[in-house]
Image (cartoon, helix red, strand yellow):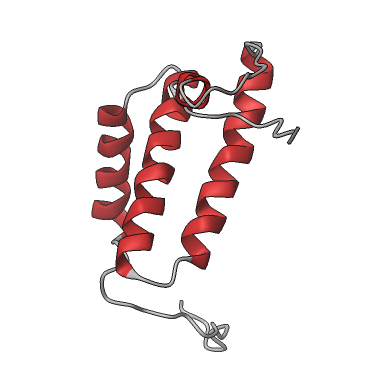
Length: 113
């Protein structure tokens, strides 16, 4: 019997049981839940990194977004609040659309007086 020991989507146990299999689950404490959400986020980002087609990438990004929704709630926030923070940061510092790759920064040797 395979052991998974990982956070799964809410309907996964019933989907597995519908196939005639038995599952063993537990409900995580808040601390365990946050820890497992962080692990799940890394897992989903890794799966996105390994995607080789646009369709695979979209599927994995949807999974990342679902995890982000859950993580946001654990911090007493909403996606609307996170989006507002994102927009503030974009206004102040820009986004990533221009594909700028910073190579290095040299100290200015001239003194400004």
